[in-house]
Image (cartoon, rainbow, N blue to C red; front, side, top):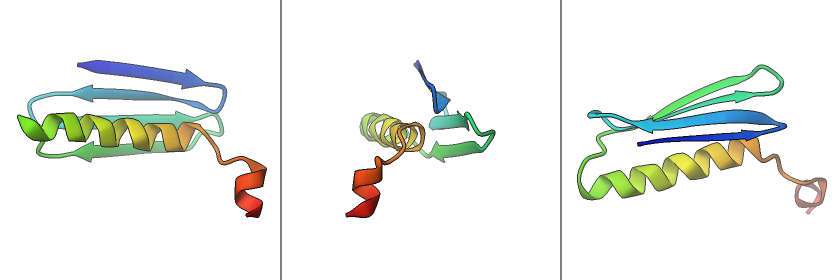
Length: 70
């Protein structure tokens, strides 16, 4: 399985293989992030994908100034 997300703030690639779920994020400012969720088989695979998507979303969607002020 594979997913790709692109925004003006960066892009994220998420994919799974026999070892787990991998996340690679490249922010528009050049910062690179990599993470892995291991082992991710059977019942754990769904949770690993959910965690990977949440992490990628958090990185490529910056907090609003209002959220930072609160």
